[in-house]
Length: 386
Image (cartoon, rainbow, N blue to C red; front, side, top):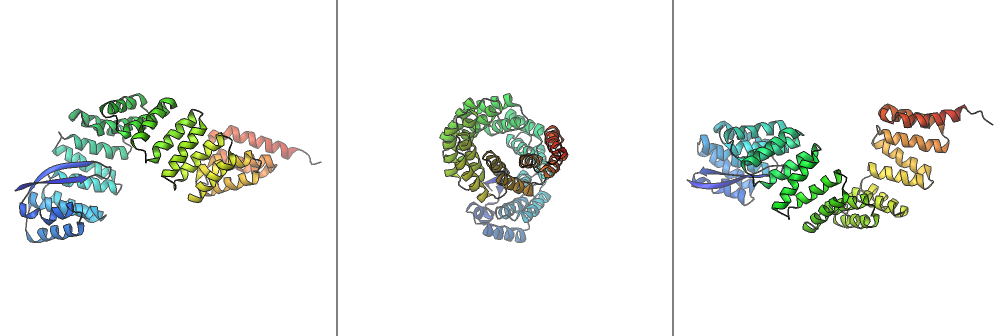
């Protein structure tokens, strides 16, 4: 017998490692082919052993599990699930099969089943921090924030050095709006490793949410220094700079982001905001047109295009953009209200009333604004013709 290291890679990005014992003659292709990335060969070798070796219990479970990981690597997830089921049938205490099956369920979007398998694994090995970390990831994907936070906390109790659990607990706390606790965890993560780019980026997000763009900018700048080829950091810097009323620097940041991700429509919309703040409306419209060329129904681009057209005295262009928006999003109450206002400005009273009423019906919170539009239109309709 010899030790074989089997890595189980979760769809959420965790790598969980366990040691199992397997007869040396079986480690050749049923395991080593997978190490080499030759998954078709691995399936063939594992199948040969399964069909000819007449193994039961742990040895059989390992073979099914290895073949399942090969199927999974090839995207053949249903076949992988079948093998993990067979592995667990052979040995209901074999934790790697639960971990791999959980990962596969997560990839298929069945987070309840993924959580169940991780709970089974925790029941078998309750002292392993990585199992709680994995279940925390699944619960976070399920938006079970209380459960996720409990799991990340449990992982840290078992292994206080587990920085991944600290980071993910901070993410969970950010999701529920517990900004102070999120900041505390992220500051601790940075104190442990100042090159942990995710901690700097997330702490920047927390500072923005706390209304402190200056401190946020420092974190985003640090993240960009660590990971200069990632457009997200430049984008975050741009947002912080806009909040600080520094549009020229924001434009430069968004331009750098576009250079890194030229097919991202959101970035052109962001740069259009900076250019609009600089009074460069023509350049802003060019960016919006580029965004719409990338993503024809981009809501933010259409809204911004309508706003710029209306400000530039081009009501028909504004209507064209807003009508495109409600074709894509028929229940967009703000778009209907904007259309109503444009119609009022054009003296088209009946269409204005119709869209104002639609806006209010879709979103009663817009009732006062819709009523103002309606009253202007009704008053105009009541005027005698001259």
